[in-house]
Image 1: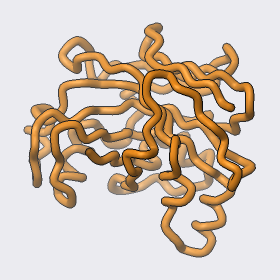
Image 2: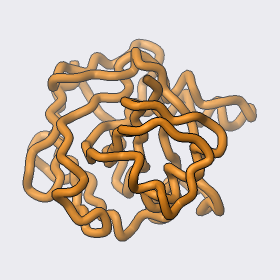
Image 3: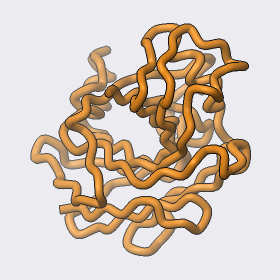
Image 4: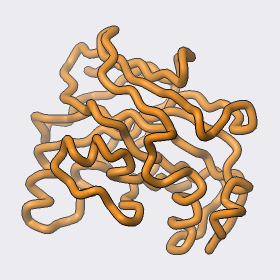
Length: 202
């Protein structure tokens, strides 16, 4: 099982970090040790003083495939979930300034909390609203209509480079509103008004 992630897939988020809007998906990966399941807590790492929350819709691959055409991509995932891409922003900025990969800032242990899933057939993929609250206050909200690259485009694109296998996860990008988390914060993620994910910061 692998975790592939899409960066800068919402225009306003790219702008808030001063990044150009990409012409093709920006892809990075996380190891399985990044996953946090069952609403277990996230422990702030001691190597960063500026860890940010980034709530994201997550698709789960249900069929092995490679070099998938976009028109067939919907056949390769059957569930939509919610996750958080925790990012050590101070490390990331330092690495970017040096022209180095982001993995230390993105792929550390516990950096990918994963919530519940719903069958993709039960929801309109073009009309998914999702949000994240911190201590009861909404800090991020997004909608699939705001995505630069659709689920199908992402699946097709990544499959040109990586063979997708059953159980692989794709984090599909975050909307604007990312921000720092601190010890004691409680994060809750929603699809519509349905609670999908809860995570305490320790």
